[in-house]
Amino acid sequence: MLHHAGAVVPYFSERIRHIQGEKNYQDFKKFYVDTALLGNSEALQLAINFFDIKHVLFGTDTPLGIPPIGPTKVIQEAIEKINLTKIERQQIFFNNWKSLLNQSSEE
Image (cartoon, rainbow, N blue to C red; front, side, top):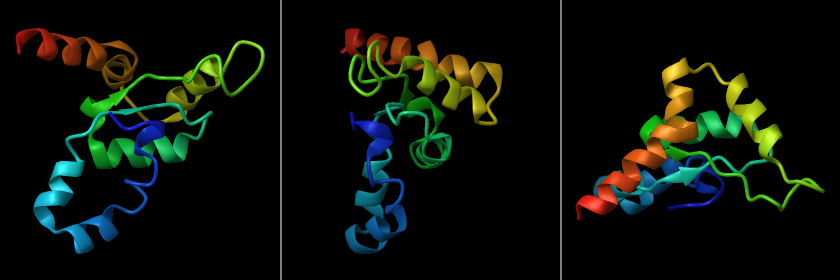
């Protein structure tokens, strides 16, 4: 799990590919990332493009970020601004977490 939509990984993805090689590049795509970016829709889209929608989990860093109750509303609004289907939004908000937990219980 990488915090904050994978930090610089999506932004430097091609740099990673050229320096680390294709196998390591593909390994980076296996990580799960959260949405805790304080409302940056463009960065969230970049993370979705790199990691795939199935690896993006709703997360907020609450209560940090926006006093007094945290950034949950701002992050929800940022996700709503991205051109996603209802099913894709449900994946981020709930289903990806559920799928990940089911995988953990099967091991």
